[in-house]
Structures are given as C-alpha cells and as structure tokens.
Length: 256
Image (cartoon, rainbow, N blue to C red; front, side, top):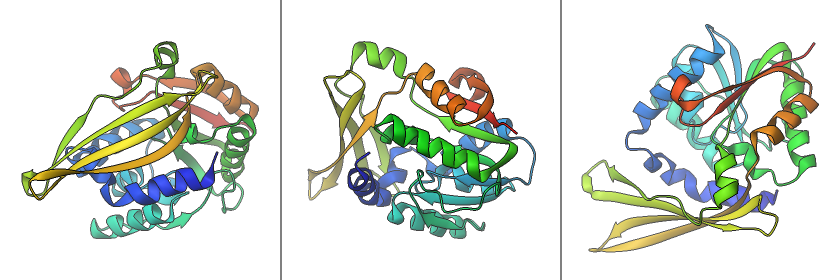
C-alpha cells in the first residue's frame, strides 16, 4: 500500500464523507443493526480498525458496545470522535495503520474492518500483517468481522466506472452533490486506481473535487486464505440480501 495515497485520500474526503449517504445517521443505524446481529449482545469491547468518520463505530457505540476506533487518516479519526460526542457517546480514536495496531494483545472481543478497507493493502505481506495484528488484539475465540466488495464479477468485467450517486445537503437540492468513481485497471487484472469525483454546486455552476487512491480487488478465496493463515477459524460469508449489510460480510473466530 502507498501509505500517503490512502491517507491523503481519506484526509481529503473526511469532511465530505457523510455526503456519500442520503441520510448518514439513518445509514449508521441500519449498519449497526446489521453488524450488531452478527456481533451479538453486549456490551462488548470492539475495535473498529478502519473507522473512517465513524459510520459503523458510532452506531455500535450507540447500541451499547464499548468501541474504540482507529484509522490511517488522522482527519477521519478525529472527526469520528467528534461526531460520536455530538451524538452523546464516547468513541476514543487513534490515527493508526491497521498493519501496526497500537493496542494490547487480547484487548478486544470483536475487531471490525468494514467498507472494503482491506482492499487498500496492495501486497500479500501487507494483508497478512494487518490480519495478524487483528488476531493479536483479539482474545481467543473473539470475532473478526470484515466487509468487502463482491469482486468476483468485478474482476471478470473490469468496469471503468461506478454509477453516479446523488445526495442533497442540509439545505435541500441547492446543496446537491454528485459522486462517482473512475477505475483504471492494472495489467495484473487485480488492482485498480480509483479517481473519486464529487461535483458540488458553486455560484450557479459545478465545482469538481477529485481524489485518487489504489485498491486490490481481492476475491473471496483470497480473503479466506489470508484470514485462515492469520489464525482464524469458522470462516463464514453473510450475503447482503440475507444480513442487511450493503457488502458481503466475512466473520471468523480467533483460534485458541
């Protein structure tokens, strides 16, 4: 992974990230309900190691869990803590690379890595290091919860763009934002460079914001191999239609 690429991407996106959702708070509640059904009753000690601005972490904290967030982007991590406070919950956060988690061994009951964050790790050693760190900070029998894009079909068709998404700001259509991505595939057919476009109204015209990063389109078989290699067992996939989360979810237990 190019650290500066992913960090700069999310540092820049953090102030606007909530605009990806039509209603961010409603999305938080839906995602917390879907993930909470897999996590189980609490309160549990949960680490969200790619917390971003808190979309999953805040929802889980509002559900009564003791959540800690970390993220490669210090801007996103700081915003997550602030947004949690506004909503009346405590969410300690840290700026941290998921390959070098700064937490004690066996400190958590659950580790969450959502929103396709694992795909920003571009080499096998990077992915292995991240998952080994997640295993280290989990207690024996603890739950790993990953959400990733469903890349099987994407790898086959190699799309060049994502459909545009339109969201309204707090002032209605006058604050409308259009978001889409262009994807530039590498020769290996697995990795792709993303150009993330946001179009925002500006003085009767549109201003364009462009952010760039790279992802690895990991298949389910690749993810499973990395997860089991890091010391996890009971690997299961939960489909979006069945579980309610917008991406496929992998759960696994820390062996011990």
